[in-house]
Length: 162
Image (cartoon, rainbow, N blue to C red; front, top):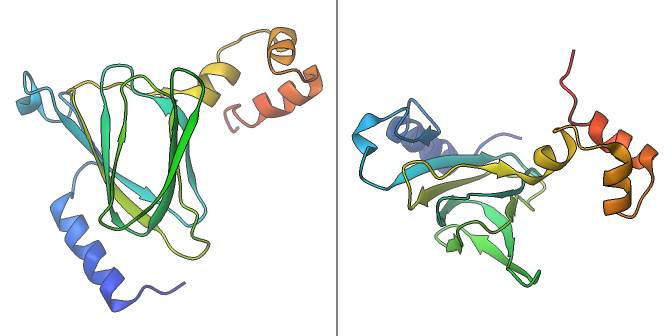
């Protein structure tokens, strides 16, 4: 799909504003040391998802600069909170809670900037942590109330590509 003039202009501004890195932490930018902040520029192709994950050391404040996103987090009582965001909206993901972002647009990308209340927020991917860490297939099958074959098919999706 061809980008409109407005989309091309926005992308040019974004590229000029953030030319080197999509994520900035103390490792990439030592001036953050002691500042307790970091940020990330996130680009979501049409229909893509940032899978369920947590940030164990920081709350995330996500500012959607372009497009639409469905976002959600699960609180400590296992209640799911969701919201559909449009450009200009802000959403907070509390520290340590599982959350996701989904670009529900079929034909357009989305761009967001996330700010974290830590120079080392950390990211723990739920699918990778569960399926790519060597937990026994039978334990996972019982945990998810499914069969070993299904677990193996899911794990195959996380195996490194040859």
